[in-house]
Image 1 (spheres, rainbow, N blue to C red):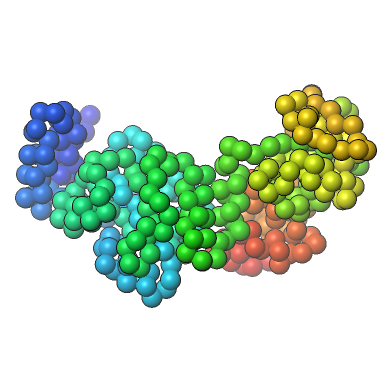
Image 2: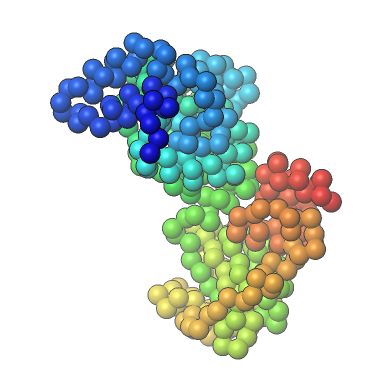
Amino acid sequence: MVSTLKRWPGEVFREIICKVPPHTGMKPALLALTLMLPSLSCSASTNTSQPEEAGKVRWGRILETALASSAQTGKPVFALFQEIPGCAGCRQFGREVMSHPLIVEAVETEFTPLLIHNNKGGRDAEVMQRFGEPAWNYQMVRFFNSQAEDIIPRKDQVWDTGGIAGRMVAALTQAKRPVPAYLQLLAAEHSPGLKQAVFAMYCFWTGEMALGQIDGVVTTEAGFMGGREVTLVKYDPAVISLPQMITAAEKVECANTVSVPATDLPAAKTTRLKISAISGYRTAPVSDQKKQISGTPAARLALTPAQATKVNAWIRTDPSKALLFLTKSQQAQLKAGA
């Protein structure tokens, strides 16, 4: 066990505060005491590492500076109100969501990042009061324009990667800013509303490429079913309906047979093909997945499943389009490795 004498005094005080039940009235008093002792605060320590709760984004900490930057660049303010140091959920949010490479790059390149500690006094407390944010709350992400107005309505309990990515897309759209394709893909692949279908064709390498090019297809996977090579597709029904998906697959000769979940059979309206329920599907080996990427510089990139699907779909036929689904840093890595 590490002795408290070897830890920062501020850490010890904060730990004490967190353990005091709020109804006793002692927690605010102890908090006020720590605010009166600058030597106990994080800013006064020599520890320059970023708190786990904040993730890996390079944050600004001053509202006025963020608003001025937003006015100059036109980029919305991505404001994270976070408890630092925080609970296990706050730390998990920092580790998983605010450290996701695509989220980090989107925040830093498409927005003006601003971090507000919701359990501090001084400037942080003033900002919280201005925007009506409660102290010691769970993490909250809000999007402001240069006049400090909400671009999209405030929403509680959005704590997952897909939810944050979706809110980022909505904020950029409302602000009439370009929305990167990789960010749209990230939101789509984490959507709980995705549907799936299995298409049989003469070669699942071709299936992944051709089906991956269809708008609304989010991910593809090479597999086997009924003794045939098939491609399992996950698609967004808000972009393409099941009948439209089947028609599009037929056009690229990737619908020798079509299988869908039993619950989706009534929606699979077609006059030519007999649609069956998915049964006995198994994934093909890793060596058969995303075969178009194999042997290209893109094979060295760390891609999300949705990115891999779209890059695989276009890398051989239209490399410039494949680039659209990569972040700027990924594009730079690709060019450096070409």
